[in-house]
Image 1 (cartoon, rainbow, N blue to C red):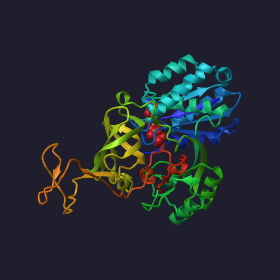
Image 2 (cartoon, protein in one colour):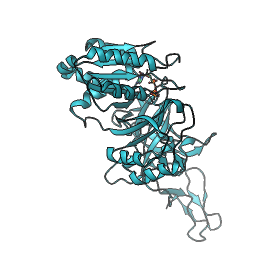
Image 3 (cartoon, protein in one colour):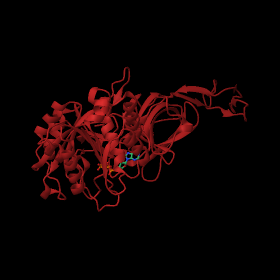
Image 4 (cartoon, helix red, strand yellow):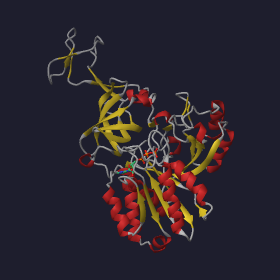
Length: 436
Ligand code: ATP
């Protein structure tokens, strides 16, 4: 049986991954439990608590009812039910359904998962599948968590028979002892830098060297002590072994869709007419307004899209040094931008600078005296007042650019869970400039 859970936490405490870790540990008494999945869903959803995460795991068991009751009891007990935005949902896919699932039903689960990461769904969308596939479920309050719970079980079903069905990464999360929660986290910073040095780039987003910050531990009162992300389970455990920190209550390894860019609607699907807020895109275009820094330190510029229309792009102040790259762009540069649309502006996560505009048109110089010629009037060419020489067109000069082509990204301090770090992007003939 596969179990999916979502929306059990609030900003004041708890974490759905912790509830999952507790259940995975406890349910081992009933049967074999799989490595749990942690899926990040649409990062733009307004009612998310933090990272819009949902979890799922599989348990091999005959007595499904007993396990269901245990799961429900833990969800009731550990959810932050007094908080307004907490609306738990649990979805079960029992062995009877799993063993008879049709290709068409699998397609529906695939569509639901992918839509949950990229679009905005309703509870009715979730209920339609739950009813048609006769899935058992459990919800509290308005039950909105059923959307995330169904997306998490769908991801599991799709990966179950084909583990490489979707690109995925790993995160090992360590959880705090109850007495320590709410207090400052005790983590030996030097050991974290050492662990990063020993395992990067197989682990990533542990530290942000450019901004001199450790980024793998939250600052909230939630039970998470820290999380180590990466592509290699061995490297993650090696890093874990090097880190000195307060004693933990437990730890759990998750298979995740973090760091995969799965939220980005690809180039061939994104067209200006179809683009909407709360969606994330990859777009090709040409810089059509030079970057400018606005109040708050954010940097904005516009691109004309290759199909039609223009869109404003923004690198927010928290993206720190990424803005230095963006400020160097110039009208005429060909770029591919990656980010989420909000208020009709694309919030940049990454940029591929594909072609630099090295051409500048200037008033021509006089052949005789070498001075700059002046315009002789609209569409009337250029004239040197001293020598009387005439030139019909502007001079075209090549400008040096202090910007290298290639892919650039927001630094780890400002990175979204789903954003694929450049150390994971291997594109032929493409220079990557990873931010670390
Ligand atoms: P945490 O990261 O701490 O686990 P969270 O950020 O995951 O918290 P939730 O408390 O899970 O936030 O709230 C997100 C809510 O949004 C859930 O109820 C989930 O079912 C719902 N949801 C997730 N993705 C979508 C989507 N694409 N469309 C509509 N609702 C969604």
